[in-house]
Image (cartoon, rainbow, N blue to C red):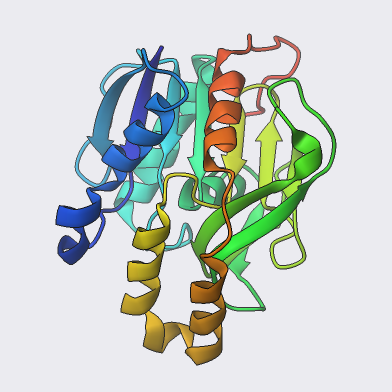
Length: 242
């Protein structure tokens, strides 16, 4: 299986020596559940794939907002339309989750409650064929101030919590998204929160740091991602492309 990582941002320079960049985080995560994966990585602020030759296209997180008027964001969306037309899978993480909502008929904006950092848990509203242990819910590291406020037509929520009611959704059998960060390590989350401490405010920072004692379900979520990619696309559940 071949996965394209569409990198929408970089780990800050001061953290890259210890933690690597986002593609390395995702490759380590996904190879932990599928050892034979192949990857192609693209910095989409610079270039996009020239061919649709991967099984799935994974959109990473970003410090940018999906509604920022940046030329590379629109170019990425146009490319993703061709991915959908080619009947390939899309995986959206954080920014990628929001991108697939905002540009395909939903709405994204700043969360009324502000920043979500540290470990956040979500309930899973029903078992899907690509899930394991859905009844346990899912806990992941988070780092976001925007969230999906309205789903695109034809999308369905599978993960929800009080802070972020649309924490994960699917669109047919082609698009899978999640707001949390299965690729993050706890120590990277700690470093990022400390870097943003003044922006977060003391209470959000303290709560986020305290939450790091909790274990996350990153490996199980990675398995969900690969199970979703491996499932055949249902010809009757394609994504409407406007």
